[in-house]
Amino acid sequence: MSKEQAKEEFIKLLFERCPTFRLHLEAHHVESEEKERLKKEDELRRTLEQEAQQTRQRELEQASQLEEQRKKRDEFQQKQIQDALNQQTYPQFKAYAEQQYKDNRQAQDELIRQLQEQHFQQYMQQVYNQQIVQQQHQTKSSMEQQSTSQLPSVAHPPPSPVTNGTNKMDETKHDRSVPFQNQFESLSLNTPLQPPTNNDLSGKQESIDDNDTESNPAGELAMINDDGAREYPAILPANMWTRKDMKEFKDAVRKEKDAVIKIGSGETVTVRVPTHEDGRCIFWEFATDYYDVGFGLYFEWSKVQSNTVTVHVSDSSEEEDEEGEDGANPEKKDIEKGSSSSSNKQPKPYQDEIVPIFRRESHEDIYAGSHQYPGHGVYLLKFDNSYSLWRSKTLYYRVYYSR
Image (cartoon, rainbow, N blue to C red; front, side, top):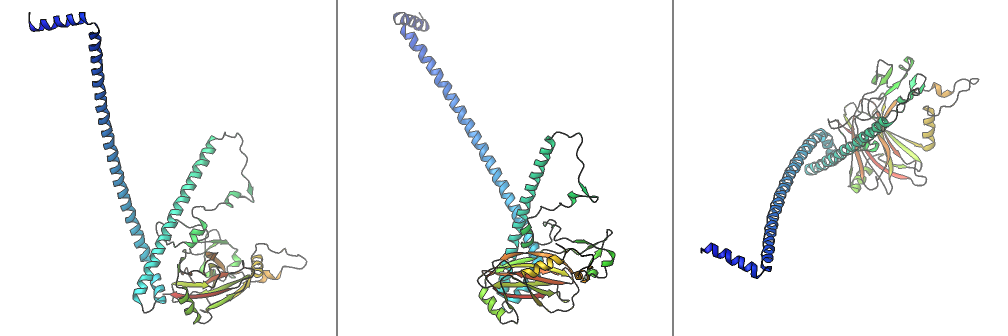
């Protein structure tokens, strides 16, 4: 008997003498196969996890590289924008710094650097605000288009309302692309990133008759288009900033003549500053004691008779009377008495609003600004205290021009 035959005979005998041993061997075999299967599944799971982790790591590295490239690109673009803004504003800021620190070159450079940095931050903030508004406007437009496409079609749409041959929709058209306050108060320049300003800052039109051409004092500054409307040159936004050296500024202003004005309660002070034939830009600075004051800047298209700066004080009732005379609520004419005396008055020169009147915390900071001459005319610096019923304000101001 061979060795192999002996093993087989022994196994047969073992199974006959101990039948439960077969069940034990079969269970052991199944258990071994199950352990092997779990081991393979665990190895496969670990391999898949390692591959997934490596994939995530590569994605994170790619995202980090893209983010770093985007940051570098944004920094490069911001550096280009800042360099362009600094190049445009350097002559104005230099002239302003020379007025503040005449014999201190280091202080001039530091002030110019601070003004340029503040100018850049406000400019970028304005750009971000404009992008947000444009995105909101696009989202609103897309929602309106979707809602309109879902509406059922009308067999006979109603006719569009027309008054005197003019569609009313033209009367309600306005620009929502730029926030109203940021557009005027921020430091914007005429750069490619600056979107077109709204109709209040662009060249304005005023319908006139042919007989009004001779009576308009600013007629030589305007142009007549084909529709018979008078167009005025476009006006750039103003540059505005603040300073903290309040005590030094007030001490210097007190030494100047007629540079400190007391504005009574309910009054508005208008400082008329004609453009100078040798100047290209106007600068202003002002501050108050203890309380704020309203400030706005306007430009009057009129002939410059002299270079004298004048101050006009008016109360709220005078302002309302002037608005009534301008045609907001014109007085009805009596046919029996004839036309009113106001019809014989010369029409007032046209004015452009450069900075709207807002309350400024001028008791905490010195408010300063500059504006490039749009042409020949008169700047109107309005200091408004009409909202104050009891308090008068002490105003310290200074106005000059640069070549």
